[in-house]
Image 1: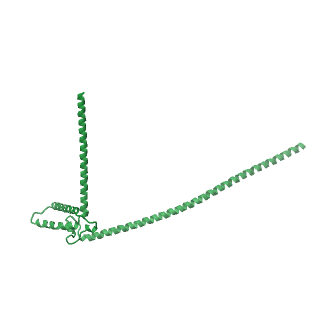
Image 2: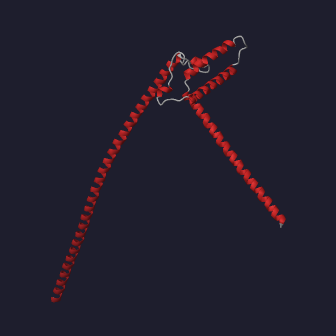
Image 3: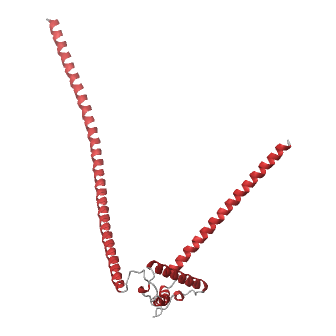
Length: 241
């Protein structure tokens, strides 16, 4: 009996430990998922601030001088591969953006929208040639803007023309529907008139049929009575002879 109790106690303890371990494991997984989600949200916010909140002209101007100094210092050295230069440039850009983001977080902005703007001077002028990976040149920027404006205007005109065509089609369909509705009402009225005329003709035909039947019966009865009278006279005349 004591052995059974001890076995039962040991099984209960093992089950409790297993349940505790499962609970702890679930709690750890949940906490880990929460941490990952929070980290992902922070990374998304950092990317949004990097795209929207960072002044690109200031960042470009500040990156020009270190880049030029780096190329000047490496003229006597061996040429660096393109991939290494791109990785170093991307690393510098990321570090500079992170620093600017930290500055933006530390700064206290007023409610005025002008506090978020920056002055476009020679020091903060945006130059496309500062970005080695950018294929768009300054000379082609105006042409591209004109082409984009032309595409936008063409698209707007196309949409307006199609909208006008659709509106004309809708008006035509509405007119045809109104005409069809009036025709249906007219045909319905004519059909009702024809039905009433047919009912009247049916009544008249039934009346005429009854009159003809009654007149025929009367004619036959009269003819029979005349025949009977003639037969009776013949019989009387024969009896008298």
